[in-house]
Amino acid sequence: MKKKILIGVVVLVVALALGFVYLNYRNRTLSPPGKTELTANGLTVSIPYSRPSVRGRLIFGSEEQGALQPYGKYWRLGANESTELTVNKDFLFNDQPMKAGTYRMYAVPAANEFDIALNSELGKWGAMEPDYSLDVLHTKVPTEHLSSPVEQYTITLIEADGGIDAVFEWSDVKFVVPIKAQ
Image: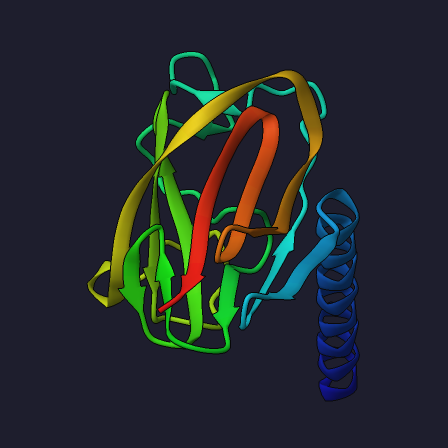
């Protein structure tokens, strides 16, 4: 009897492990990892993130419209793990001073602007909302509506006047966060 129970437990553990591997692989193929990094104007900026696709869905909008990312709700700025920003020296993030280091980055979208936050909580799964008491910065950036939609979420770092611009594009929305050395 003990042998049958042991075999049953082993089969269950193996089935659960295989299920986890499959779901993890499926998530990674639907939203593959991406990373953007740039050194310019004395700064090195790095942003690892995951890249979901539109796949015919309404991305930004109201809950009533059935948007994947409703206005006024937490968004991890990607998929899978939390999106993180690493900067090698003290910097200005949209003209607000920050210390060098790594931060969890998230947003709360609205129709014409996004509230972008930096948070000191790292290493968490992105779908889980952060501990908001660990937010170290909030800033608002205007959005631009694109005439040619972007299918796969993309973050690009480009050299800009005295710093680096982080350009976020997905669906028909684009916004830019300037990052400059202090």
